[in-house]
Image 1 (cartoon, rainbow, N blue to C red):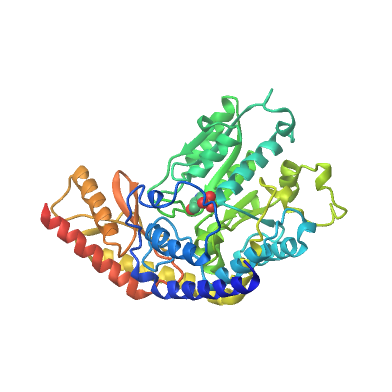
Image 2 (tube, rainbow, N blue to C red; image 1 turned 60 degrees about the vertical axis):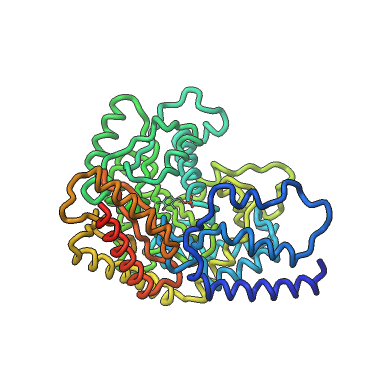
Length: 475
Ligand SMILES: *Cc1c(COP(=O)(O)O)cnc(C)c1O
């Protein structure tokens, strides 16, 4: 393809992209295809001869699009958002065109230095201690794994990297019953073992009970274990519960335990000064992870990982074979030494575009607006007779269930709400997911898509009530 043909297709694609942004609401939010529907439409063999881009693009529209779940629809309320935004998409186009590999400073100085500056912008705007340093990772799972491995290396004086686990104590990692599965996965990969991940029970608000954490750690020490790492969740996946960081941080400090903060989703709210108190105590922690690729309008993937000691991180991950040695080593940040992969995408570019395009004020307005929409829904649910909140709204997440006044049987309620969720998602008009809280099948409505507006929430709430009552009448 020459540049003339490229230009022509690119213009055509950009037109399609803008049209998609305008019409995304007309697609079923959750893809309605059946397993295998897409697979069977793709030829079994790699084509022998070259194909025309027009034909490829037609297949994209006809085969691929029906199998797409529309995460950028303002009627998407499932899991958590994975938002994009126009400035982010524009930056991704440039990133793809440059096609750089930002493993070392010298392989693209702009990528390394823009990343360094973007981490400072975010750190300062979010109220992270100014002595901390940030680095971009692909996902929160990878950052949490890096955190557990760094904790392991610091505790073993960097000897496990070299000699393995011979003669090491029995390490343990602590988190609440509500923390994300990436903690257990990280502990498994880091060689700690999932049996040594201790899940601490939670209080009425699904937040970790610091008193139980303290007692468990003291008992473990008495029994010969070495408490390695505590993971505090600032915004759990199920209900966006906030663990009591200050109390947890005191325990970590007292017993010299690595403290990692998982704010993968809710970290965005730290751009709002009124939310910064939820990380009081962070100065006693060691690491913090947050995903701009969720609720900060930046395309997946882009995870921000802040650490108190970049030295501990680099000591853990730096490998310097001869072919990677450069004459600026020691003067600049070679981010391949700050995490697991060697190769790195130029992810800071989209962050730069997004933060400049909206400005701090614009980002804050969007976040506050989403939280206000969730407050509106919370008020409606509280006022209704047959819907209940399972826990109070946290930020922009509302967790609720349908409970017809004359139905008290837990099993029946569970089945009813499960049916309701499937029915709602089958309409294609909205997409919600669920969690279970206290054995109750709970609908989660996460309100934070880039372009969500009041009318979407009103329509969703009307649909939910209508479908629920229709289902109730069938009983
Ligand atoms: C989304 C999420 C994760 C995992 O994020 P990835 O970037 O997909 O690995 C971890 N923890 C919490 C609290 C999350 O919300």
